[in-house]
Amino acid sequence: MGGLGYWLAGWRLMWQPGLRRFTLIPLAINVLLFALAGWLLLSFAGSWIDSLLPGWLDFLYWLLMPLLVITLLVATYFSFTLVANLIAAPFNAILAARVEAHLTGSPPAENGAGFLAEAGRALVDQIRRLLYLAAWAIPLLVLLFIPGLNLLAPVAWFLFSAWMMTVEYVDNPAGNHGLSFAEQRRRLRQRPALTLGFGSLMTLMTLVPVANFLAMPVGVCGATRMWVEGFQRKELRDQS
Image (cartoon, rainbow, N blue to C red):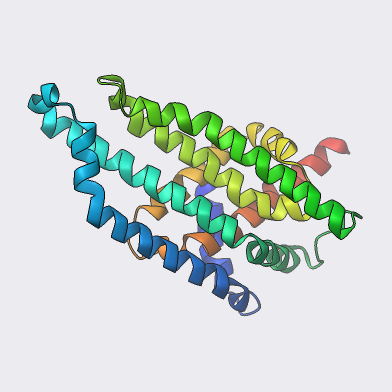
């Protein structure tokens, strides 16, 4: 199954009778934050975009405007997705555990770590994730302000968003098994087409009004099935 299949699986799983109640809190958090993102875009997008267009490029306004709008949409909704996932992390982990139990017939394996050890690991991984994000996001933000090169910004931001979307959502089932951020990235890099395919669909989903309200539960459910079938079982086959 490819990225599209797992994305569609996320839609189906979130409506399963035994899973629906675990999607309510992530759904509520997502609705509130994406409503805020939409309000900010409607209120300030025009002035933001005008500030990014130097006067000497006015003759290319018709070309640059759509590119900057797309870049702003991707960057804004991507940022709010990260915030939503951070706030909803405990609830997303529970949802991922329930989805995995639904798929496999047994709950996720315990990694044996105590609460404090597990909390410390999660904190360290979160710091590493933020540093990793900053290492890529800052150059991409600078790219927006470089005339000529900012034409590449929409493509660069979309690919980066697709990668990070999968990284964020896969962290829920993988984190339940105690896998570090570095190990998660290693496994995702082994299947770039699947990783970017799923992440691209999640990125596009965040750009569609109303549909983006459902992005978080769809992402958690779809990424959990993708992790179980596309990565966890593959790792077991490779070891056997």
